[in-house]
Image (cartoon, rainbow, N blue to C red):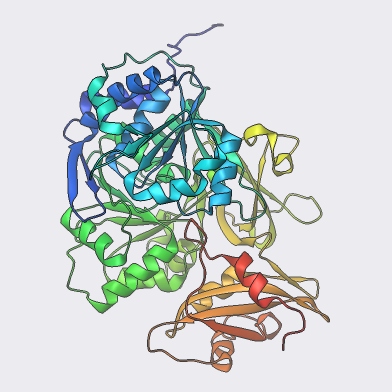
Length: 537
């Protein structure tokens, strides 16, 4: 019998990822688009070298072990350098979402106790809206035009004046990065990622049946670097040597499509609302962009309607659905078509692809029903999804939200799911968005996806509204395509091909556009406030 350690106890720290980028990936491109539309070009290796100087500059400012360095930046090369420098020096990179309300930003920086903040010049107005609420020891500005604002330090000057840091040896379980949840139910909560979690996430995300990242890829993360680490793509690129195209603040369909074509991107990632708008642009001008190198579009953040899968298939582009949360770093499952379904009928293939996928290796899943019993894995029973794994949060920062974690260490996602015999997750709804009518559940997600398959409908959101007789009833909020027309009776007829009569909404409200959260999801809390009055007809 052999006892004790028989293999090298090598730390799984992001330092190894940064060093690999420096040593092996000096030809892997990093393209960063500026607000004026121009692009800067560098490489992963060059960013890693600059990160050593950046880390030394931060250390001279007093940043030490475990200190939080906030970023108020877009997807840009300087953000990548901070992704490298701050964790590798032993501090914690804390990304801030500039689309949040100033009150939320004020709460987050105070809760995180950020010592230093790095701000892009295009976001100075956002910074000023909450600056007075928290005492930052240093404010660093990325300034390309004109002088550095008074009272701020210049990012480039700090790097130019610093000597390269020799990276310290770090424990793999120490904090590396920090993101906050979107706060759709109460105040945002901080999720702290360890070095080990992000290294393992990067390795498994690159697997062929996951995102399939390799050195032959060029990645364009439309998902922001301030949202769940851009789904881990920057670290996966650094580990594997994939090129990165960082779109900056401009995310309109035409400019994203320009980048995809000009930079010969092979993989991109973002939320469904981005890709629905981009599909409209492609349908309007199908010959404008050469996307022959684009192999896959990773879509997450909300369920993907079949109509979107079919739409991109028309253009020869493959949508791959993924599921995850801020608390899962974020990748939890990926929907890759199994080999035995490749020759099956069209409906069966679309049915599988519209689901959220099979759990990633090392991610365990289970679901409980309302009675607290674990559900069987089939297409019928529903329950709340619970997960655990090496990159799944075990608690929130400062011990908040303890009720989101089970006594035996699983994270309660708040997603109501079915899990089929393959272990494929099918999200029926968020627990807070399910409609309980007459004691029976109605999935808002299923209704939304079928509504968005109607040719006149651009966007659809379904909410529960109070009902004196049934408790709750579904209400559909509809945004029509430009120049299109329909009415509630036609939409009910369309839904009636898939849903029982009692599941159909009595009310349809037509709006110009459906409000979105700061992460691009439909903002249902606003819709509830606007439309849920019980005495409306």
